[in-house]
Image (cartoon, rainbow, N blue to C red; front, side, top):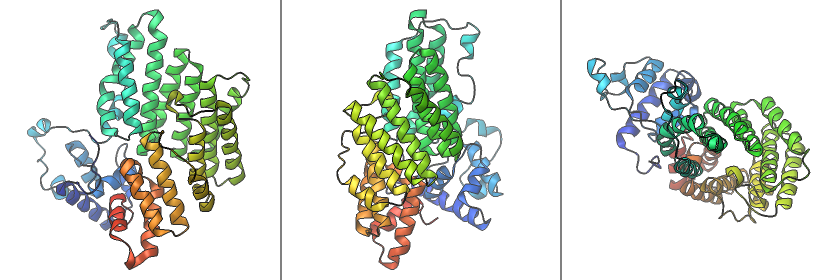
Length: 415
């Protein structure tokens, strides 16, 4: 199930989140500092909890949060069960990508190593599930992704060990694609460490699949994980090495061009995050040239590469570099209706940020609200959106519209 958008938040979760925020502020802690005390949590997740969007149902997680704040679980949540023999009977409900995080925390196919399961896998059925995982990832329905992978990843890890020799590479290809979907989902949730682990496993599985370009697509996911980690040097090294290797091929097929162009877009992102204007623009231009050679929008390896996506990334890069006018000029001619909800929402989000930079208040709020309708997860948990909304509230002051203030609440912009 998808998360509530703000209007349908459970009052109990809202009250709990308010309590967490109060205790955090009393201790002089930021959301980032509190999240750092919790195992595998991010500031984005912490913001969701405080806004009531992310429920905390698991007792062990409630206990961890209470310990970090220096209070008892009952002080944090009066309705929490008292620790004792009955705790083991408390229903465990996954939060976000918790289940997915647990799947990659260990080896998901130990029984196969012992020879306990030698049944032949249903690769057609597994392939359908992998496609479903990617659809859910593009729609930012991460709770459903998490639920599915608890069975899918172990099944795929078993499949690559029990498939017939002629089917083994196909099984590895499915495994690589599933790990790539996980890497993308974790990155969009802000969990860079889990994203890196998933991307690394995707690269290893892709190499065993015999699909060379799938390996490079895995590197693309790894670069985005590095960017999320703030490891720009590692990101630039990984993406440059991949581009240099692919560029030695003069006869790249369409899927190879899709990967090469996407890597140029990833490198543009790295340069933009480092405020390297000319380098970022050069990579966008290289991606545009590759898209011209491709001649159409494609979705090889779920990269959605083509002329349209290059334009979407050009808008994003311009906004990151503070060139709002250029972003709005490019964005005015982009028709992204054929792209995934995540990409369409991202375009509107970046246009909203560009309008905010130009102090076009009504247009900024309008774009952000439309983006939220398409991809609420992306908008409500993106740091750049939070900063833009906070700036809009500060600039408009007492004249801030009801829609803007409600958006500020949903994004945690004023926390």
